[in-house]
Length: 359
Image (cartoon, rainbow, N blue to C red; front, side, top):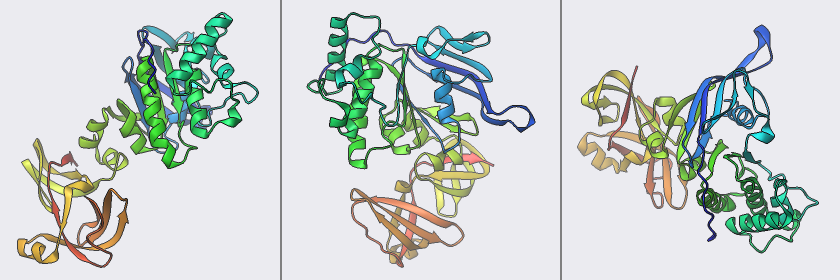
């Protein structure tokens, strides 16, 4: 996509102490429990969490489809939900891209994109629709019908339709979920480029950790109705707030440890930890921080030995699972083809800095 669009001043999103429950009275089930989240103007934030954690509920509350029990939601300086305030969905200035695109089957692509432009003249609607289709790389597709498009093209049209009214915020509800893996990565990149070109603030709800880490400026991980951690993808991966976040955002090797200053003693040997770490706790290492060496070298060096139980070859790298006495299953990642195979013994060497979480 090469087209660009002058960006209007984007508005950020601020969610403060939002609670929401299913049902009423003693049997009510709390879904969101005082959730706080801030998304900066022009940012793409990914909301990530296990099934049932409240991701979709949060999206529907921000859109205005359901009312929260309490809390406040603001777009820029404008409060759209809070005590005594309940701006209806159609007046919030929010665009939505659903999982299936949800295009109108009886309207052409261009008319789908122009559908929400009800307060503009016909010529301006046509011009705006054409501009949005160019932005998402479908400049020559305006006269086609939705059924003539691929799934990825339909999602691009849905994004163009969401952006056409110049919304303050775009909500993307697992928009790549129905696509095959070959299409997802390319479409994620295209959607990210279109959002940046338009300068629009966006929130992507997903259950896919790779998706969240690869395309978002900020990732918020929800657990038990609250944000367990919010930060850049690198911050969440390199410095998870706790062992649960470490395990949820990418693979993690969790080990019991005793820390003393900059070093922690673990069943796999000593690893580097932050200077203020002390006492008993858990260290989190990433699989790429574990190297496997032949048993002869491991024995000579006094290193821990494990037995390979499973090998997962991904083309660009290999994940090797080992059973280590006194530790359990650990996972090592290395580039290229497998070196060890199920049944082999291998020495396990930990390196690099680990995160430490005190008990």
